[in-house]
Amino acid sequence: MRRAVDYVLDPTPRSVDELWNYFGSVCAYCGTNLDRTARSAHVDHAVVGGGNQLGNLILSCGSCNGDEKREESWREFLARKVVDPDVRAARKRRIEEWFALHAVDPYVPSQDVVRARAEAEAFIEAFGAKCAELRLLVADDRRRQQG
Image (cartoon, rainbow, N blue to C red; front, top):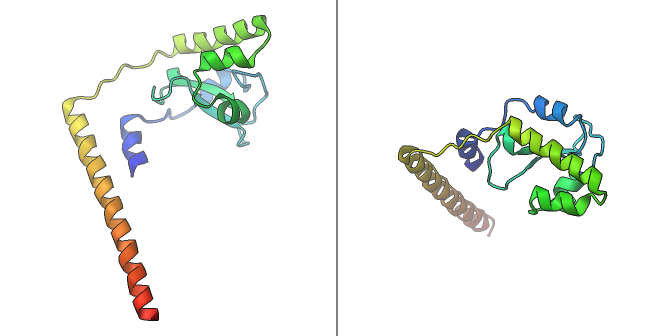
């Protein structure tokens, strides 16, 4: 339910084809060739919490995105990952050009949206609590019936 609420507020792009094409199906960090059908490719968020807009996404291999970068900024990671200064500068330019082509929309939700989201979050919390209560009641019923 929480993912559904998040998706309403910050939907993922309908297509990431442009991202794949721009980066030539290679990891923007290490240059590894990526296969769209494999689970090794990821769309990395340039800024954590920066949204799902194309201007906040970078094509990345699973190793760079999942195993190595973690919560590090893309700039810090690139500086650590790519030793060769010329290659690092070229990859940095490529990423920055991508961001320049896809400016992030500075959406600021209205008070009505903030209120509705808070209400949805309260509902989700209450639903979770009721599910936990139901699990306990069912477990107690089963123990009594078996006992």
